[in-house]
Image (cartoon, rainbow, N blue to C red; front, top):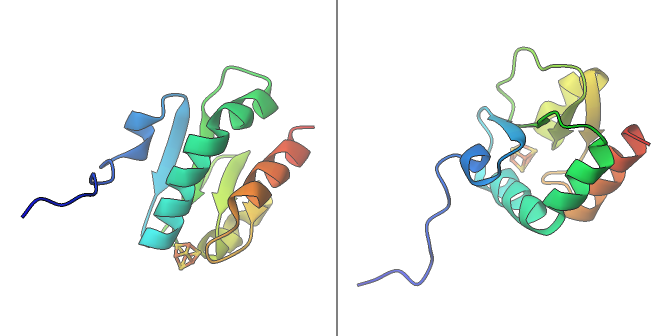
Length: 106
Ligand code: SF4
């Protein structure tokens, strides 16, 4: 029997050029939030950045180090909140992610 749903992309960063997506030990809730977020707000996110650099995004609890300016999405990334933009939630609300990032790069 055929599934009516397309499978998610293996690597979100391939589907979304201009983003450096770091996913270490995240769960499907944050993955789908990020996928929906990038589809809906990806253009605005890049515009908020005001330069040509990739937007670094982290989800999941398995990160050792993250570069300064990383968009840390979800409670699992809370210990890295000092290195960039942290959006709390499990998972966070998509509109809050854009709001937090836009404030940081204002
Ligand atoms: S913050 Fe919550 S939703 Fe996101 S990866 Fe962690 S457990 Fe999953």
